[in-house]
Length: 223
Length: 216
Image (cartoon, rainbow over all chains, first blue to last red; front, side, top):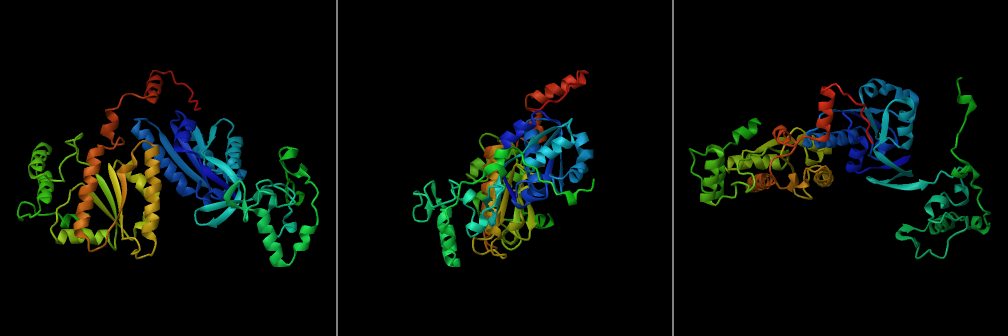
C-alpha cells in the first residue's frame, strides 16, 4: 500500500490560507490503513482546525467527507455536492488522490494534507516500512523475496557492499543490510547458487526514467 | 451527572476536617472575590490562579468505570471535597477515549480535559490505559501545535480505592487550568480578541467588494 505521513498542522493551516468553507476529504484505502487519512484522522484534523479558527475569532465552516477511494473518478464524483459549497478542498489522500480530485474539479483549489512517502506495509501496529521501489521490473525471484532495489540503501544488485557491518547498513545501524537478509534467506532455502550469477546492470527504462508510466489492460476497457 | 450530583458535599451542614477541602467548599459557596479571601485565609490549595482570579474553569474528566469513576463514588462516600469545575464522563475503559473526543471537548469550549484510567498493569482490558496514555500524548502535541497549550490535557492513573487521590487530581487539574486561564476557544475569549485578517475580508464582503478567496 501507499504509506503517507501527515503534514504539520501549521503547514496545513497555511495551505488552506483564508478559506472560509473548507472541505477535508479522506480516503478509505491505504491512508486509512496507515492511519493518516481515514475517517478518524479527517475528524481529528477538522476539529484541530476548527479550534484554531475559533481561537483566532475566524468565521467559516469546515466540512468533511471520506470516500472509498480518491484514486478512482467514480468515487471522487461523490464529492460533487460538498465540493461545490467549498472554496478549498484539503485532501488527506496520497498524491494520487489529490490529483484525481483536482482533475475532477478544475475550478477548485485543492491542497494536500499528507506527504506521500513510500510503498510499504505494516510491520507492527503503528509501524510501517518501505518494501517496494516501484522499479517496474521485479527481481524478487533472484533474491529470495527480499528487494535489493529498495531495501538496500545503494540499490545494488550484486551485494553486499563493503559497508555491511554485522548485518547492518553503514548508513544507519537500525537498517538491516538487505544483502545479509538475502544471503541468510537463500542459505536457509538451500539456494545459495542463485548468488553465483553476476547480475548485469538493471534496465531502468521500466522505472521512472522513462517518464510518467501508464498501464493499459485492453480487456478491462469497456469503451 | 446525577452520580456527580449525589457526590456533592453538604458543605454547610457537615463539619469538614481538611483545611484545603474547606477552602474548596467555600469557593463554591461564595462569590469569586470572597472565595479568594477564604482560600487565602485557610491557605487552601483549592484557591485561585494568580493571573485569572475570577475564572472558574470547565474541566471535562473522562473516567474509567473500573477505577476513576468508582474512585469518584468513593470520594463522595468519604465526603471529600473537590472543585465543582469537574464534569465527569464515564467511559468503559480509558482505552475507549479517542483523540477525536478529546479535541471535541476543547472545540466545544472546555478549558481543560483529563483522562483517568487504572494503574498501569491493572487495566481491566489489559492495555487500554497504555493506549489512552499514548493518545493523550499525541493530542497534547496537537494542542501545542495549534496554540492551545498541551498542559490543558492530562492523563492520570488511579485505582477504585483512591477516593482521596481522585479529589487531589480534581484539585490539581483545577489549579493548573486556573493558572493557564480560560481557553481561547471560548466565545467570550474570542470576542475580546482584536480583528483578524479574515474579519477584514468579512467587512469587504459586507461592503459589496466580495473578492475571490485565493488561498496560498
